[in-house]
Length: 218
Image 1 (cartoon, rainbow, N blue to C red):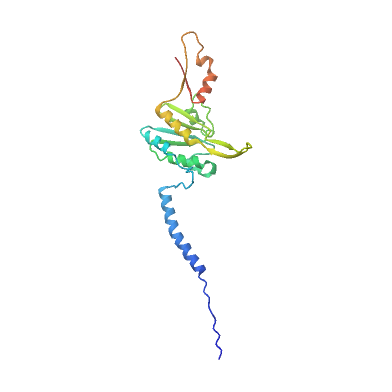
Image 2 (image 1 turned 90 degrees about the vertical axis):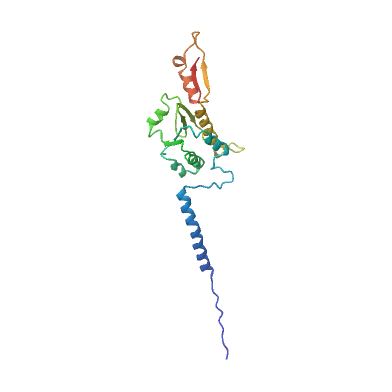
């Protein structure tokens, strides 16, 4: 009597894959919930392009006793989170998020076209010529404008290959300026019949204040 034996092969790959997927979900979902709950971000980029440098952090720690106002002017932007929608603006977005963690720094984002009154309040004389892309730092009565947060990086042929964020150093410098009162002044000597700033040099006054210099007579 010949008995035929049939060898059965069981494929566990589908079952194993399902189990691994469930285990992975069981690990990732709780971690994701915790991260979202505490609003916690980890900068995994090699250059730490989304993290403030130690120098900036030391500066921010040293001015915790100063009330700093930061105004960010951008088209169709009302909140910091709006910058997260633009990949090019991510370095600025993460920088603003870190600035906002300091209790003494108040950040206001607005569109100067939609809120011209606020822009007028920051620059009543119109000297700063505020526009989209500018950041205004204010501490007490001192105001400093930061512009050109990004620069074009060109290759050997002069072709633009990248827009590089360089705003951190500029913002840090502005914070240092308004908190220490270290604004450069240009003085006009008077007393010998010289022309006055207000009557004869209004254009020069506007241009120098737009460049974050102050003018005075001595």
